View 1: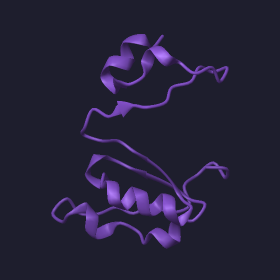
View 2: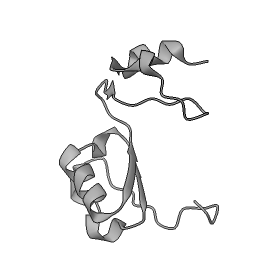
View 3: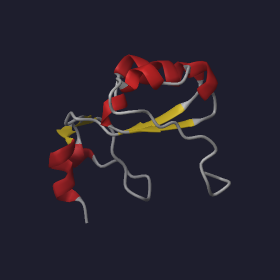
Length: 92
């Protein structure tokens, strides 16, 4: 992202499971892993975190917001704990 372009992209056929193409978490140290719903696997994301990597993955679930902050780093208690779709009602 700092270079203004992706350094690596992996594209797989739709005929095979996405899990077969996940990179080894040890290769994701100090790396941001971006993925869509098909790649959401909580144990894998925990492994990325343990290895020192970062992730941003869209899920099929409606996750519960456990922490919310304003742009001024103020904790937004009225949003906790709520499902994400309920928090969207508070968005500008």
